[in-house]
Image (cartoon, rainbow, N blue to C red; front, side, top):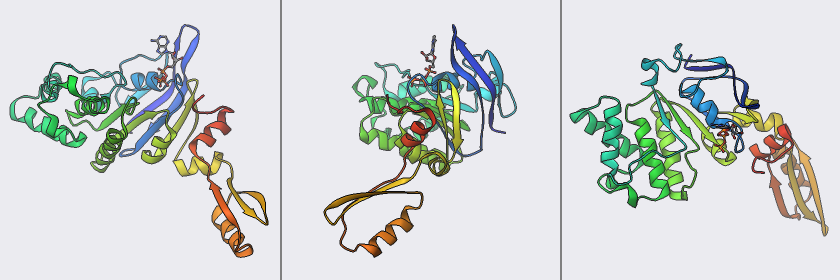
Length: 282
Ligand SMILES: Nc1ncnc2c1ncn2[C@@H]1O[C@H](COP(=O)(O)OP(=O)(O)OP(=O)(O)O)[C@@H](O)[C@H]1O
């Protein structure tokens, strides 16, 4: 088992931040933790990686507690809070990360080149970090998490404050890490990102796991019907259907002259709404 979370809870005062959470990761998957601000995603990440002790429950990473040194070397964490030295260059920042893992000399140089390539910052290696955009800082933050070539990579809200170009580059990096066989934990409150990147998504709210499955399974189980609306004979019509392809085919067969066809498929937002009665982005 790569990583398992069993009945984990954590309270701050009388407020539960994580409430009896259980799940297990599959090797090589991109696992999404999707939930609104304050859902408990970061707290879960900190517990999973041994940075925070749970009040109850158990975490196992490769069969060991996450606080074991041998386990820690196999996890890379790109935290929500960016931790970089502004006055140093990208390469110098990564040298610091190398020193944390006793990587030196040519091994360190090769590791730095590898991660700069992965995040698309090789050509900015010698520029001071203070000249970087928010998106470039995020990418360098991720590069630091990858320096020791970990088996599990955890990205906590990696697209916060990121421009579209850097966001796409981050997505490509996640794809490349998955292709290299890494297991990835990706937290976000953006359903589009979870849908684009994740093999399975855990939907959490108020510290509790509400559902866990592939995006398609979540959509078909909790997303509700697809809404098809169209104009015919001067009137707008709407049908709700769980089988949009068939419904569309028969509709077009019946009314060749319909117009303003609009198809609204369920999204993870509809799943969240169905499960909690509220919007993901309240
Ligand atoms: N150090 C702390 N002290 C007190 N309360 C905390 C602390 N850290 C988190 N919390 C509370 O625990 C709950 C979960 O917070 P957490 O940061 O894990 O959520 P999140 O899903 O990561 O949200 P965000 O996306 O905003 O970071 C929130 O109610 C938060 O206010």
